[in-house]
Length: 74
Image 1: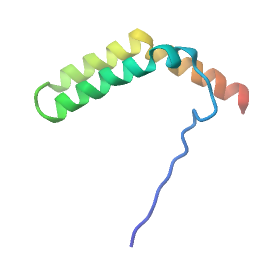
Image 2: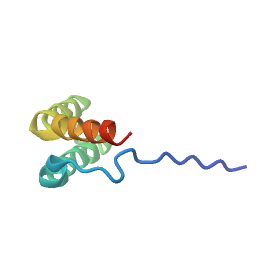
Image 3: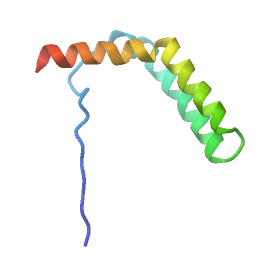
Image 4: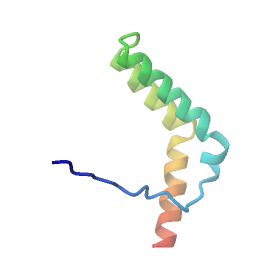
């Protein structure tokens, strides 16, 4: 028996200017670090640093912008 679970992306239809200008670079940094951690080339401490970098370089701003857009539309 197979059960499909689909969660809708809450950001669909919303706009975050910082995500448009910085999001791709920020996501690439996280994905690169995640790959390195999964392949044991980096430690979990490096993952923590990558998250901290994402947050301080625009991730927190992106999250706030999406939260504001979501609140305004619901």
